[in-house]
Length: 318
Image (tube, rainbow, N blue to C red; front, side, top):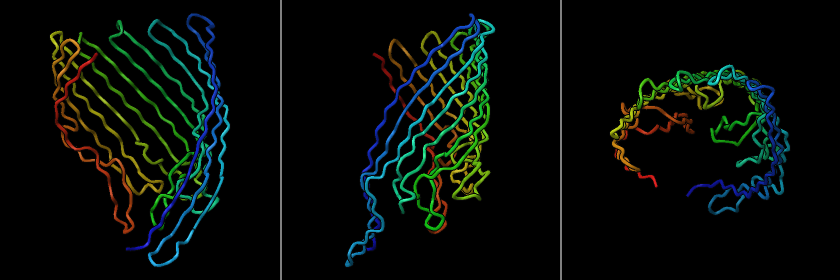
């Protein structure tokens, strides 16, 4: 038997929040909404001990901490204005404050790395929501910009490539989204969407060489297309396409997945509150990874997505 490196931790978390929101209608077409949320979160590491053990030798305690607190008190305002220029269409703009609470790390190696700060962001958005042709056509547009302070990211040890815990860095996210919906004839529904996002680190204090790199798990773009038909006699069919742009899995932007798309299909019969379906997910057996990491030997290891899957489903609603 070899050596073992054990970590023992007891972490508690307490949350208190209060919020309120009101809307003022200036005219039938123009409205202003304002809201405020206050929350306080306390994460407590009651005890932590890292022990290195070799058979035949006394255990060595490499790190030990007690009663470490991380407090997060934050006010989160929100304001939105909307103008309805027709019964089925409106433009809007909003600004809000977002927060993800700080906490305590699951693998601290020293007292400085025990805690991490709360993530704070400003969220700016403008857009259009509309429905036309007696609700047979819908068009939604949105553009957003989110500067983020103390963005929380899992950091890896460059030597061992093991996760060290969560660290903080500043980031910026900007992009737009388009959603389309159409019902050309009764029973036939078509949906489509496209989103583009530019998400990057703007200031990474612990690793300045990562400044400007793309955020992990943030695809460059996403898109989808779905066609669904439900007949009056109960026949049901749906085909959908979903795609993602290239995605990085680490802060260094060395591990990535190229853009890919998968197709799902479903055919069935529905009657009363029941339905029976044949389905095929990832119909063309597209190979893609949902996560990648480098092993100690420098080999890249990937976790693959679900391959082509065919099956039958029965549904009952009561």
